Structure formats: structure tokens, C-alpha cells
Length: 518
Image 1 (cartoon, rainbow, N blue to C red):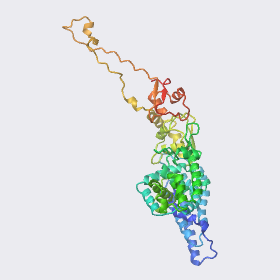
Image 2 (cartoon, one colour; image 1 turned 120 degrees about the vertical axis):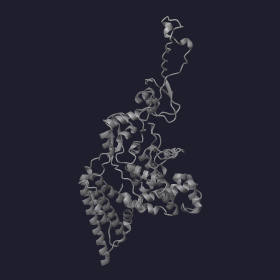
Image 3 (cartoon, rainbow, N blue to C red; image 1 turned 90 degrees about the vertical axis):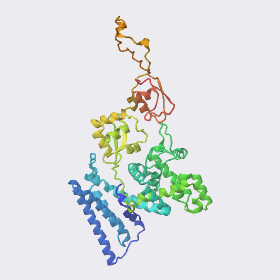
Image 4 (spheres, rainbow, N blue to C red; image 1 turned 180 degrees about the vertical axis):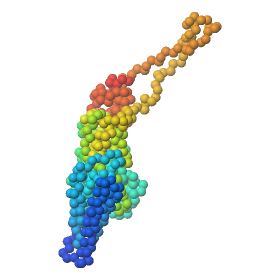
């Protein structure tokens, strides 16, 4: 996906491909310009191939050459759409040639170790992504641009995303790269722009699957409970709320937007206003306004301030998703190729996060693992054989650091540590009475006048009895309670008839501690 961060001009150019008239005859000047662009594209392709060779020889200049070559190609594509007689489709063929040339290398790419991400495989893996990005975003960008209005309110939103909210935008993009394979197909099948999906997700949750608002909206797309139920989201019978499932929530959001677009004259702005401010209000405003646009004063002022802010902020995030290069945005590179991770010993997402390390990323893999596995709590211990959704990078690091060895042991120790065990419990303190003090001299029959008092002998305090039940406090999980009373999570769950895999408990619930040692 990092190619997208360098592709705004080129991909916008491709969006115009279908509208370009075909030239029947070119002047010498136009033909010379087309030939020059073709030469530049061939030179960029050659530079890319040479860069791969350098990377294979561990030459640090290779990555610079590869990135520069891709940028050169994008510049050529941007110029091509403005040049009479130039075919962007022909220019895009360079991507396809690179894809075909490096297919074997890409499929044999090995997961690099720790920060060693400069292998040739990590570069060639971007080639198919570049082709997909060009194919998808070209049409997507044109579709989105036609459906929204770019105005000062959107510009103000862009300014906010690029200043105070820049970290949130970057986090959203990074999180989305892990979720894209499950979320984007739902919008694609519904005929909706990917940029809309990203914009809504960035504003609603920043791509944190387990986000829950104070109002009760939940999941990456922040569905309220009743709205979620109407679009097939909610409790699934196992204790899991599918609003937190990225795939299901994206499908529901796509259905919601198509329903709103159908009743609101295909207006994305009004559909977004409905998503945030209520579909009943949006429909009523639309009907009474005679079908005016969201930006019409008579329509705009009928929405609350939150909605008037929400609409341009979503559009601004979507715009930056499509045009990052124009605004100096370089998004983080993420290797999000999917892979299954099968646990060879019991573990939790917390424990995996520690033993996996950062792996060359900024924040490690806890958010990725949580987003990809929404049914599991971070501290929930998962049995051997559990299969987690992961990436090739995560799976490789797991095999190296989490199955055995010092880091695996350290991670387990840290996760199992209980802060409360640091407190020394001595039981109730009983004051020593004078009659309880026994003097060694007296017990030996020595008179008190010449006797030396011996140290008092105290009886050992009785061991406090083990509680038989425990009342769950707010925020506690079954795993944390099991650790507190030094018992196995599974045994505690079985004793209280709690269903796997969530072992759901609630504040105020009384748990039987018969399975614990105390």
C-alpha cells in the first residue's frame, strides 16, 4: 500500500482514461512528446530493475533507485494524461511487466528478521500491489470526485487532518492496511468508493476494531445497537457482538450507504449526515428542502454542529487517501500479506505482543492482532491449536521468538505477573499482652531478682481462610481474576459454567473459587 502514498497524480490521471478521446492524427510536436514520455517510462523501468539487483547485492542505494523509479513512472503517467495522443493504458503496462518478471521472486519472499526489511522480496511484493492500486484507485478516485463537492469546508478538514490530527490519520491508514483485505471487498461489491470506506473509518474509529463510544456506538464503523441489528449486526449467540467484526461491519456500512444514496439523490454528503446525525433527520431535511444539496444554507443549518463538522472531515480524510502526494504525506509501509498463525502452546495476544517485539514497526503488533481477531480479548489465554489471523511477518516472528527461548519465557513471566502479589499479607496484627510474654528465666525456675528477660515468644498468626466466592469488579476479566487467585482460567471457567472462547463476565457477578488454591 505504500505505493498509494506516492500515486496521487498518476492515479488521478488514470481516472480520466475512459473519458479521453482517441487521437486520429498527431502533429510532429505531439508525437515527439509522446515518444519522449515513452522513453522516460522505459528508463524508469530499467532503473527499477537495476535497483532490484543492487538490493540483492545488499547495496543500500538499491531501495533509493527502486523508489525513485516508481515515482518517475507516476510522473510520466501524470504527464501522459495531459498529452494528446498518449495512452495511459500503454504506460501502465510497465507495472504489468514488472509484476510478471518478479512473480517468482515475490512468491518466494521470506519473512525478514527483526529490522532487516531491505530484502528484495519486500520490494517486489509491492509490484502487484501497485498494479492493483492503479486499477482500483483510478476508477475509485474519479467516482469519488464526481460524488462530492470540494470546497473550503473540506479544505479546513484537510488542514486539521494534516496538523493536530495527523497522528490519527497515519494510525488510521496503518490500521486500514491490515483490515483492507476484509473490508474493501464489501464496498467494492456494493459499487462504492474505497475512499468513502477509509474516510468514515478514520473519522469514526481510527481503524481500532474494538472502539466503543460513550453513546454505545461500536466497532470500526461505529454502529449503534439498533441500527446494527437492522443491518445484520449484533450478538451472534456466542457472546460476540458482530459490530466489532471488520468484515461484517464494512458489509453493513456498504448496505447502509447504498440505502441512503437511493433515497437522498445519490448525495454522499447527505448520506454521511444521515450516518452521523440520524437517517430520519436527513430524510426529513431532504424532503422539505426540495432536494437541495447539503451545502445549501437551508439544509446545512438544520443539522447539529457535530454533523456539520463530521461530513467535511470524512470527505477530507477520503481526499487525502486518494491524493497523499499532493500534501506531502508518506504513509507507513506495512507488510499485510495474510497468514494463519497456529499456537503451539497456550498464549494470549498480550503475551504474543511482547514476544513478537516491534519487528521493524513503530508500535508492534498488538493492534494488528486485535483487529484481525476481534473475538478474543487481549488478556484471554488461548489454548494450544488456536488459529489466529495474522500476517506472514507476524507468523515468521512467532516461530522465531514465541515458541521457546528466553524471550518467550520472559513474555510469559510478564503476562502472568500479578501486581497485587507484591503486597506482603501478614494477617491481622494482635497486640502482645503482658500475660502472654513468657520469660526464659522464669520457665527455667530462676528468680525474678537476678533474672534476665528473654525475648517474648509469639504464636504464628493463623492463615486467612480461602474465600469461596469472588464478586467481579468493573473492568476485570476472567484471566485477571484467575491470576489473582492463582488458578487456571479454564478450570475457573468450567467451575462457573462460562462458555469459551470469551468467558464473558460482568460487574457484580459472583464467581465460585473452588478451582483455585487461594
